Length: 105
Image (cartoon, rainbow, N blue to C red; front, side, top):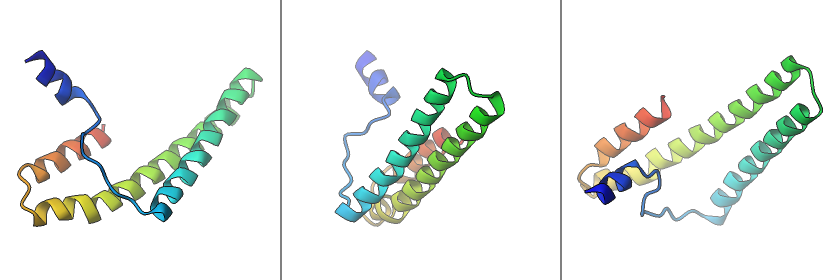
């Protein structure tokens, strides 16, 4: 029973999503830009940058991550969710509702 509860709490599914090399590269490019913004934040803190400057950079990084999530969610809806519904996968809608609940916290 404890193992089942651990699996329910885990954020990683056993499922995989095949992506084209172009889709994958686009996602990796976005993540690299976000990573650069996070590194810039760290450097700003290390160099005692002015608070509003750090907050502005943090806001830009958060916005970039939200944009990444929107693109990924759109792709998920158009591919995985549609496929699951077409294949009458039990629990597809519940899985989507749970995902949206996590994203909207």
